[in-house]
Length: 364
Image 1 (cartoon, helix red, strand yellow):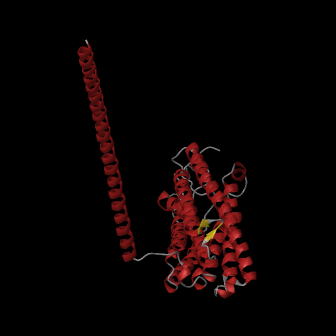
Image 2: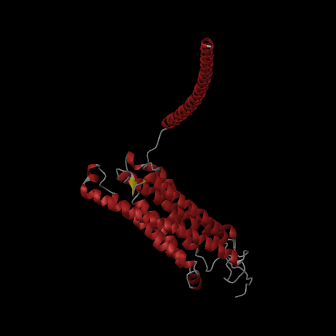
Image 3: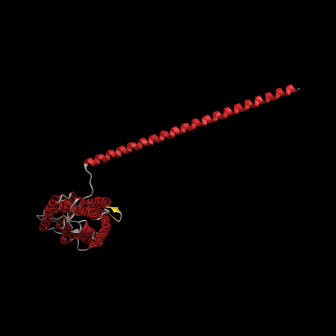
């Protein structure tokens, strides 16, 4: 189909085959308003709950919901300026990237659950703190890859189709990395679930006063993964595949709202309803942290240990040097003694011959 230039309507909408077209459908103004309100309410709830239960790590999911809210506010404006990249592009990127914050929150939540419930504070011999850092690292890498691909894919009609396709492929590579990390993460969540069932059967959770609420958190975590992985990511994989492009999915906005926006909204509200702050209570609910005084004392101790190690190394080198010099001096004395003995032996030999010659003369 050849590219045309049509006259935009009052909302800036042009046909799909127009050179300036950004949407494959007529975007709904009302739907964008509804979802901006839905995510806005969840954002207010998450902010209040994080302050109420003093859960600092909840800033991560607050960021995720805030990005979703901002994305749909921009989408509201974009539905009235449908050929303007100024609103379409940031909305597109925020919708694509906001779920990464949700993933990071799940990773941090699992780490704190391990720290809270398991006496060893580790799963499969992996410490909870290290586990969280590892998955957040994967999330950051996936974020950077998806940002790169998303920027290229949202460059608009001025870019060549090959560049846009390359951007989509890069974005899907980031999705694939994200999917792999989530699958590994799910196996660890199942491992924690099994451990908690054993501990519940043994009564150790009851003795430690932690028998309540763990099932809610585990099942909420599972549900969050299902909505984000089995629904949203699979939808995106199909949408950007060759088969998806040839289907009716890209041309109908309902698929986007039902299979992308709605699952993310459900995941956000699940964490509102079963908020970790209401269950993970007490000193074990956060990773062990050190006060400024403790950090300063630890730093000074490390500095002193380093100085002592340096002094010990210098003393060892000095001792080796002294020993080497002593050996060298001792070897010199041995050589001098050997030479002296040889001289004395020669002298004795000479005197012996003189004495023998004298006796022979007397005999003559």
